[in-house]
Image 1 (cartoon, rainbow, N blue to C red):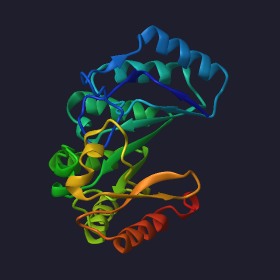
Image 2: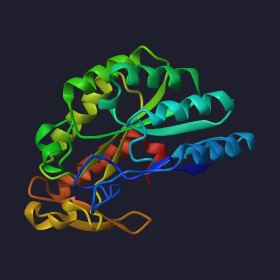
Image 3: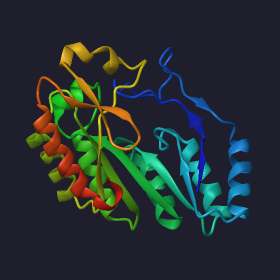
Length: 238
């Protein structure tokens, strides 16, 4: 497995995320010629899997051009793409899905939450109607995909976390994953710890602090959410 970038940065302003340029909110694109050279090298070596690290791959027209080149030269490599539901719309969205279905791709959608108050608390601009439409469009294509959520968000409860899971499953998604909220230095949410009374604790083998309680959920509530998340993908959790 290899990792590849076609651009760095993110145009969106989710307060928990450090992928975007925190000073100017710019996205820095690699030249297409460079990206094509790397794709050619990777596919010639018959690498089994390439994770494209762009925080949101499917923004603008360049992803279409890149995928056309991938499909032209690739036969065995699986490319995973971090994608956004709201961008699967219009002609570009249709081209994106067609290229996915005719190539070798796995899409990873970071939805985080479907509950509007929680989304607003992290400055996540989810468009429910566009997300609903994207799920319907995915049903028409034979494309491998998964959806990830976050637990430990400000304003969240075990019940609201379960609602997000139920929503995704009811839309037909077979693979739902959930990850604990981490407070990353330099992000707006890191600076809002006192506002939401976010408490951290080092959990797991990697010694990474995660949020385990807040104004809306206790540590016991977090344990319940953690158990729910573990049951989603037991083979990937410890």
